[in-house]
Image 1 (cartoon, rainbow, N blue to C red):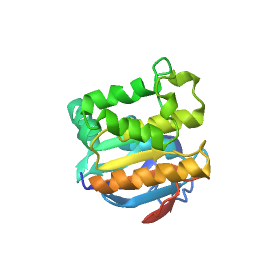
Image 2: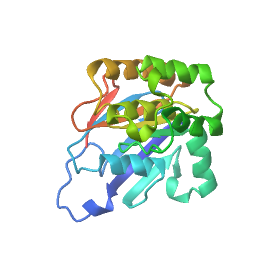
Image 3: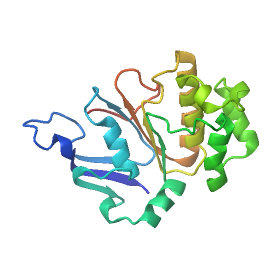
Image 4: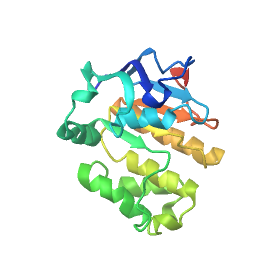
Length: 214
């Protein structure tokens, strides 16, 4: 997948608003593979909705979203399964970890489907993000910042054309945010992936090709 094209897309809940001032909603906007985008937003302007639309998790929007020219409303369940395994990865704002499983088990759940990372590579990611000693800890007992790092590792465990990161560093200090940025730069660069990051304030520190106001 090379492009994501939004054509006058708007959450249905915003349909009755008189004026929408946005670089994203109700615009003709193309996200290109290999580029990095920051979407800055105030709370309640639809940033998590946008990520859910692009990932196919929700479809309560007006307008059109296309992947390489194909309207995603025409995609079947098998198409989304293929995209989620090979083209689209996401770090949800609410993380969606299984709290009763360990940090490592949460990552392995995905990696067993994709067989993308070796155990040595996964261990190196845990160590780099300062949670090497938390792999066998139940995820539900970790701090939110630690859980964010686990969810980030999980989202790297697959091939991807685009990576969606919804407020990925909201609970991280500068050092861990910088480490996450370096790991993201390495993985996205290796795969030639496009990166779309949302933020309501604190954002992932990296060089962006485009900054958009939601």
